[in-house]
Image (tube, rainbow, N blue to C red; front, side):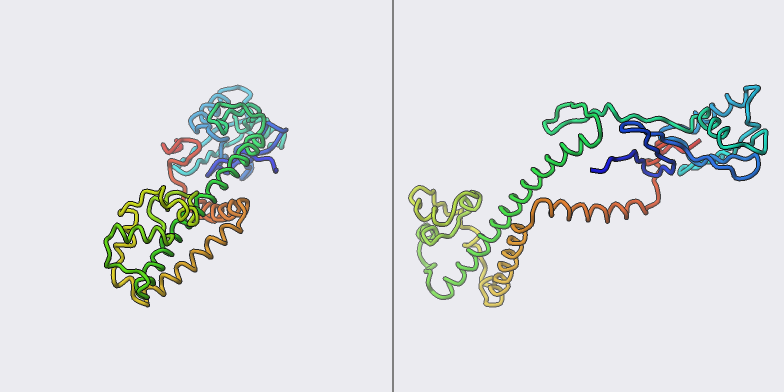
Length: 298
């Protein structure tokens, strides 16, 4: 896996890796003219007010390289224009000035605390340790998701298939619906129709239901979805549509069976990345400001 780096939304500074667990997060400082230094970004979570204090403290020193400064703030960003006493400043002197003003922040990630798969507090040495554990947990979740999808589709298929069979048996006079409802329910059970109780039991197969008919509580309410079918749902047009839905649902089930959990995860990630890019293109909201928390960079 590729190591991760610190990232803050709406932050435009620079991140530099010093080692396995150390980074330098820097604000943006650029010479715009002779003797002028423009600051357009601070390290994450550093407040503009704190930066102003650092500027004023530096200016108060007899050896200060800063003559004066101006500030232009907005809810979405900052801008400090620093006037230097000398028109020329080399890279080394500028770097030293930036460090003194707090424009470079060292961040360490060697003591990461997070909840593990069991919900217990755990210390991790690197972000990759967290990812490795998360990967295994996520794979288990996708396996559970796949099983749930197949179970849900199988339940729908059983219901639709039984409705299709029930309607065709009535139309072909194979099933006499003029008899007592309890007798009709028993016949449906003997013919392998699934009651609501059977549909909720994923481990019960049609053959098993037939063999253990005497052990099953044949409740009239178990076939309400069949008894409540309307005449309009038994027309040839409606049955053709239902047959088409059954075929489509079976194809969906086969596709899910053939799809690995890794492929399911990758498909979700592709959708996530598309939405992520859309969100990044939206104007930043005040609540997302990493410096002032939406209060305005004053």
